[in-house]
Amino acid sequence: MRKCDLLTGAGRIRYALEHLETVWNENSAFWNDSVSQRFREEHLDSMIPRLKLGLDAISRMSLLIDEVERECES
Image 1 (cartoon, rainbow, N blue to C red):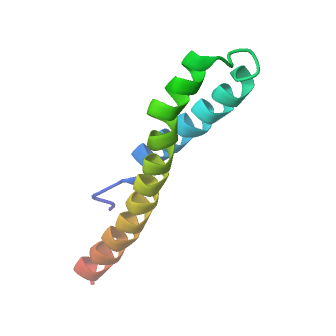
Image 2 (image 1 turned 135 degrees about the vertical axis):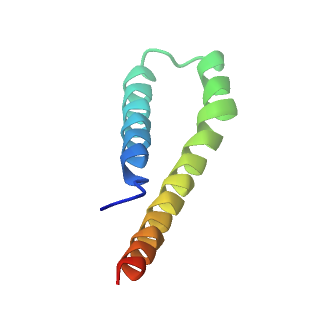
């Protein structure tokens, strides 16, 4: 029995991030002024790489938890 599930939440975050990037790219053709550039610079440019690093860390942590659970069961 799995006691800890990090991947479900990470999957939701990954989906939301992909959706955000898709919508941003689609709308950047229509909203391309100084306000959109400032929003991108102040929010997206720093948030997206940090989210990707966080998702990678969650994936690694999930692997470690799986290993610990297997060791505890044996």
